[in-house]
Image (cartoon, rainbow, N blue to C red; front, side):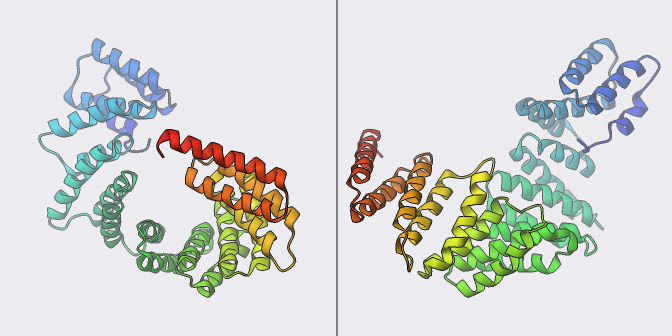
Length: 374
């Protein structure tokens, strides 16, 4: 909504004839009454002579309004026409159009901002900060289009142009790059950027530091480098208290990762308290992954079944809770494996009633798979 200053942009076009109508458009726009603004700009065009400069501003207003009310196609079409019909495309215009396009059409953002950075870098003594922000918009567009390799390329370009004193943006880009490298399984680069992120965090960036620590721990855990993983988790977990991330998803992920690192080394008694804490957080989240929680219950149940002093009753309860969650997860292969495990468990403790109950579920699932062709 702060992409352009409507008051400043429109003041040169106000006259005695149109001042009330333009004033009303500006006021309703500021109040966020976008549908009303669209009806008023339409009426304004019908009732007043249109200067090309004023038409451009009203088109910018219309594009913004359409984006805000969820009519992205209308917004994108307005921006595309303005971009293509602009004979003398100034860099400022391109950046404005690109930022507006970001609200409604990432591919259009890519097209416009690519044009902008080419012009910027061809200028003698070009504006480095403007270039940095243009590359940032390009990176965000590619990330939203799930073109992560391109997003990384543009974020790195942006990072190279931001001045050293812009510490918050440099921190943000290191964190972004770490997360994206992780997403495409470039673990070494991800850890490098996230470690640099940790170095850059200050007292006001506790949440970014926690997320970075947990992310690095997960990557080391995936490589079976458990001691390194524990080092980062032991630093992260105490930091949740007093942070905005306490009892949020990343808090549950930290406990789950700690539990799984013990589980993977067959240290089941050590894993149990962390699984309990992870489950407690997942259950109170407004939205949680049934698949993730189901898998946690399965591992927690296995720990109770096989720990030094087994608790078969608790194992049974949690195996059943696992199935309850996995049935919501829409992953037939995972559910099938879990049902096989729970059938074997109830068979091993001689509970034939439960064994038959889950055998029936297994048969039903198998029939569903056969009919669906899965």
